[in-house]
Length: 134
Length: 388
Figure 1: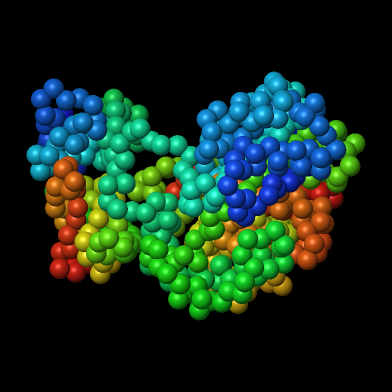
Figure 2: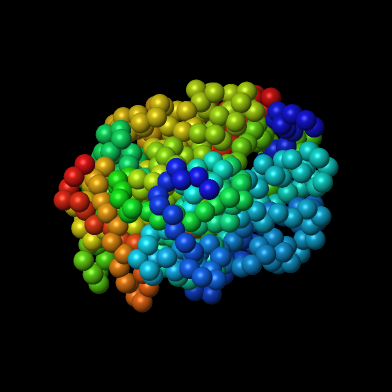
């Protein structure tokens, strides 16, 4: 197992092998998990069974540092709650995910950091602004 | 056949029709509309259900769409295809029908669609419920509009595209709709109206988003040889291409570049044509950003320049390029999956039967379908007999 894979090593909670179940269990423990391919080193998200870059059956669980750059953002203003931004963020480890930032001022290219929160009884990886840094 | 180019001109659209459109009211089902459009398209083609031996359909309202529709119509097909790739499905069906007819697997293909989403639900009825986890829905996005909003925001950031550029697309669509008696929205619309309307998911306002209507459509396809014996002028299939690169918007590599960049290039290559050869362009405009992205990706202008390309009414009636001459999904009709209407309008323009909105001297039409979150893309080139 190569140590130069993106992120840091992460262990699947005991007994779990199904990709989504591992991801959710890691989140509940406060870890933003993703997968990396031991053959081609690609960072892979969302979770799956085999590498979608090279096809190898060689995915291994990794922990993200949760630092990212905003790739795009859209602001929604629901009637029943405050305005929020739905964002696509590029994680430093080399993958992209959707998330939410409860600050509609967030802009493309801004640096943001994950903050795992309990929402409706489940752990969700939300992000917060790093004070407007680029 | 070893080269797809051999399909060029081998099949033709011989009948097209819409069902009743707009708001059909309570009691009329999606299947009723698909049936109605099918019957009218067969009448237009001078054919009957006895001639149909292939059925192509997709629906958000009933499972096994071709099986359901064929029973209703009284058709027992020997070729059946419910390819479900969202709003572009019906353009994919045309390419599949072309290959199947040319291979002798069937002779007369009916492609049909119906939706009563406005009367039944008042909003978009999605095609299927996913029973797998989503890595997007927990974050409060309003899908699909937020996906297109993210693409628009990125295009603005990267290329300096403005909300005024997006509004130009909505205004051009409305001006075409005002020439189409079947269009749902006929009232005047200005750039300022679009800019001042309710924001749904920034930077897209309600006027950057397509209509929510009822409606159905159908297209009848057969071999070029048989088409020449039928009453309507044949509209020949010159080439088509399908591609999809992602399903979730978070997995789209570059939000400013869709798979239409692949399908456009392939379809033009198969047809032996270039964008400058196209006389009318019918694009899947579920949102104003779609039109900008597809004009770029299909090669009508360079990447990043569509905002300037559409400015000053350039794609409106009398502009430099006629785009969405029926008024599009933005102002004419959008029952949830708009693709079949790009084929219907292309056919009418090529036949010269588009009334007040008829573009002069039309020989080549491009129809482009989109599905999901800028996901599936299908491009089809059609032509009259001068293109063979």
